[in-house]
Each structure stands twice: as C-alpha cells, then as structure tokens.
Image (cartoon, rainbow, N blue to C red; front, side, top):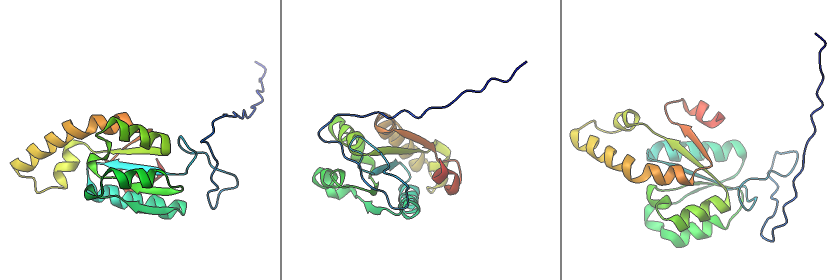
Length: 167
C-alpha cells in the first residue's frame, strides 16, 4: 500500500467587527486571539474559592498577565470595568455568573474557564459535617448550571494543579 501525503494548509479567518482588536501577549511570537474581543482576558469560575484563587494566580504568573480578584461585595460595576480591560486573569466569585447578562458579557470579553468540582472534593475541602454536605448540594445545584453555560472551557478539579494549568 502506497503512503499518501497530505499537505496541511493554515486558514486565516478575517472577522469584520468594529469592536474586535488584537492584543499583543508578551512572550508570544504573534498576537494571541482570545475571547469575543480578542482581549486576552481569562475569567475563572469555581465553587472551591481557594482552588480558584490559586489557579488564577498561577495562570497569571505563567502567562505574564495581570491577576485580578473580584470579590462578592464588588458587584456588577466592578465586573463591567474588569470585562472592559485587556490581558487579565480574573478570579470571579460564585454569584458572578448567575445573571444571563453578566454571563454573556464575560463570554464576549474573554475566555471563561470553569474548574468543575465534584461533591467529594468540595466535601474534603470543608469540615465534612452534615451541614456542609447540605450546603455543598445547594451550591452545586444553584451555581454549576450557570457556570457550565458561561464556560468556554471546563476543567476537572480532581487533577493536580499542574494538570489543571496544563488543561
């Protein structure tokens, strides 16, 4: 059987949108196109607050981008301001993705990554009490569907932090 050689061709797409812009990412050989606005923003959602903050800080360090942590008390005006920025790794609180308007704004302003935690990993991060079990169940039911709808990428939390960063 004769070997067949297939030539691979790069295809470049040109999008004619007024709001699109390319952002140069340090360390990259060319402009990196990420997100709806090509902003370089990455928004990180996770039910485990400590894991989310840790991964966001490590991603920012690895990519040489600004790390921004938004807290629950900051509210939508801060989310809108952050979404308008460029080249940021943003750690978002649980309630950030509850609103359809905010989910769409995040999707349009960068890549949204959801670090998906299962029940047992959340229970292991808690005190393991019956109250904790009930709270975890409520959190999973309340926030996970919104996170999944907002996410461009879903990464499992049952991996090591190095594997999560690689994903």
